[in-house]
Image (cartoon, one colour):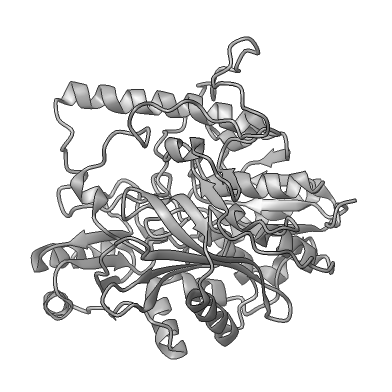
Amino acid sequence: MSLLDIRVPAVLLRIDRNPFHHGTLGAVRSLGRAGVEVHVVADSAGSPVRRSRFVRRLHPPPAPGASPAEIVAVLHRVAARIARPAVLIPMDDASAIAAGRFRADLAPAYLLPQQPGTLPERVADKAELAEVCAAAGIPHPPTLVPDSAEETAAAVRRLGLPVIAKWSRPWLLPAGSGLRSTVVVRSAREAVELYLRSEEAGSRLLLQEFLPPGPDRDWFFHGYADRTGQVRAGGPGRKQQAWPRGAGLTAVGLWTPNPQVRALAERLIGELGFRGIFDLDFRRCGSTGRYHLLDFNPRPGAQFRLFADSAGLDVVRALHLDLTHRPLPDGVPLAGRAFVVENYAPLSALRPAPRGRELAWSAPDDRGPGLAMWALWGRHVAGRLLDRLRDGTADRAPHPHVPVARQAAEPLVPAPQAGEPLVPAPQAAEPLVPAPQAAEPLVPAPQAAEPLVPAARDEELTGVAGVPAAPGVSTLSGQPDRSDDEKASSC
């Protein structure tokens, strides 16, 4: 018998257009395996998630640029089809902000944590987060918000080079502008050029002290704050491998006890009165040893399945249990458990994992998404290599204005064009990957190099942290060429 109330379905909402968000698949599998009926409201065209056997139904998401009212209207249409109350689980910051702001309008069709409706937006906004950390006494990199070109140059001199430049509300960045939510700037001129594009960006520019990356410096904490405010499920994790190196999403994460990170997370949640799922990103300063909070994501992080304990509890299941008034089991943390995004770290997916491991895409009880991912990934890698051969160089700058830190959430595999099939259905006699051994999750044999993507440019490997694309005020939908689920400092 399932611990979860399987009479109550779950609706996963993702507004951004990233078809390769493995966190969505993790939530589908976590709830589906427990017997919960799972509905997905997201752009699933070209996404391996649609191949999961645990998806009950896919629903069209809000259109790009949808207003908050239009997002609520889409959710009401989904609720009418389901015809009974459902647990709503936002999977990106835009969804979390919309759900928080319109919680009263969505009830009773949807079950959501009860907290101040503006709190998710407050912690997702980068300028607001700096103020939140200052008020709560949580270490945060020194951050300045200039009001003029002159102040921008002065801020660079004060913080020192290189400096991190962030847009306070990157969800407002227009598609095709070449602007990115976070970049590393190496001169006052570059910073001023960015500041002069503030009107185009639609939000304030922040300049932040650069914290260099290094071994064991990137940490994250995932948790669920229940109705009483107690932090349940989740735990602290260490980023062992990232893509791009030193700056990107978690390619390999390890569940690692860290009392300091836990204490900071619990103190912040208590100070804010936050309720629901959260994902915090920290970077340890090499000189002081202090853990600085870089991001507060008011929703599940993409690698939340790392923290599935001995009772099978993770933050998504904790949310469903708590909102349906069921007790949360007391499991034992599985320190040393690993999470691997196998298309970024295939060799790590093949190495022995004596303390347990979960793969982002491949699973022996749900093979469809893994097969689809590898087919699409192979097409993407081949296309990238051909493009570089045609151009005769691998060093093209991504934008003429400033060096860009690759946004880890940007889908590396383009969605198919209209009318183009997702992937050919694999034939039973022609497996795309070798048969798994025993209970080992399904992975393909890697090539000599790891990861299976073309080498990143130097500027893509610059140590950047804290790069979520949070959602917006006037419009909450993500842009097709970026995502607020996976970013350069977390996930």
